[in-house]
Structures are given as C-alpha cells and as structure tokens.
Image (cartoon, rainbow, N blue to C red; front, side, top):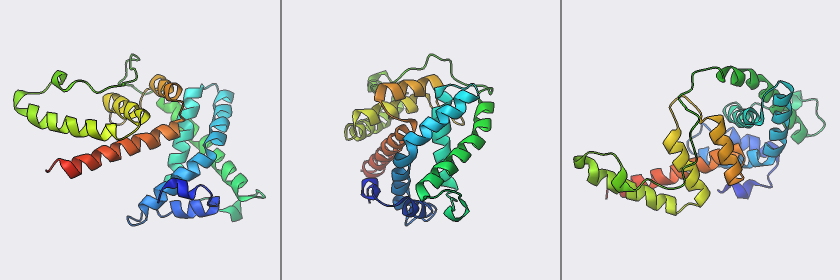
Length: 220
C-alpha cells in the first residue's frame, strides 16, 4: 500500500495503523500511515515549533529538528487517547498532543547543542558520486568496490534528483551517534524546498532502494 492511498483516511484510523509498526507483517502499512500522518500535521507542527523555539531564544534550525523529533517520538509511542483530550474534535486533540511532545523534547534538544560535534562547519551539499577511479581503495579491492559502486549508481538513477542529493549528502557526512550539523540540514531544506520530515522520508526511500539493489544483484 502506498501512503498516498491513505491520504483521506481519518486521523484516528492512521494512528491505529501506526500502532502496527512493531508487527513485521504490518510494518509497511504502519510506515505508510505514519507518512500520511506526518504530511497531514507537519506544517502546523513546524509553525508551532518555531513559536516555541523563538520564545526560548532558539532559531529555526532547532525548530526543524524539534518537529522531526516530535514525529519520531510519536512513531515510537503513538499513545494519543482522544477520551483524555479536552478538545472538541480529534485532529485538534492530536495537534495539542504533538505540541506537548515538542515542548518536552526541546529541553533535551537544547542540551545537545553544547555537546562535542564532529563537524567543522565547512560541510556542503553533495550532488554527484565521486568518480569510481578517484575512490581511495586498494588494488585488490578495486573490482569489488567498482561493482558495488555501479549498483549504487543504478539505484540512484531510478530515484529522483532530490533523493540522490539527500542520500549522497548523508552518506558523506553522517557520523554515528550524531545528526547532520544544523547549517547543512538548513541548506538541504532550502535547496530542495522540503521539510525535514520529508527529507527523512526521501533518505529512507533512497537507502531502501540501494539496499534492494545490493541484495538482488550483488550475488549474481
């Protein structure tokens, strides 16, 4: 099922599908429902996060990260209960619930800004693969690396240019245990005209497609 097929489902039904996330047989439907859920609420949540962050002296870059983390948290714990909400309609109740998550997460996000960062501040968007002949590999590894390189290239060619840019940029700069630096995620959002949540979806699609190619063709 494509997430587009769920665009007109009620929010209550989307949340019910999202709760299937830990069931291997239903995980794909849960992911599609989560995507539809994010697209339904992302603009409203982004605006609210900007207000929350501005009021506490943080910039828009923190607000974008906060919105993304709020959705991440909801995916992990989709516990909204309309019966406990004081809202008159379901969607308003969900919005208020997401705002509450955002407010609780902001403190943790702010603390992270003071942690050591592996980034220099010179990171930029990556648009194209490095030519295979320029890769620093040993001679005995050249054949294997070249074959893998060609599979990745074919997979990226099947995706859109935005998927390619997102994949290459994350592949180049992502450090384990760290998110991309704020100045780089801001560049990606501006350059591609996407929200941070959409960038994460595109990233997952790109990584999934490449993994699919590697699994199907690498053994042939």
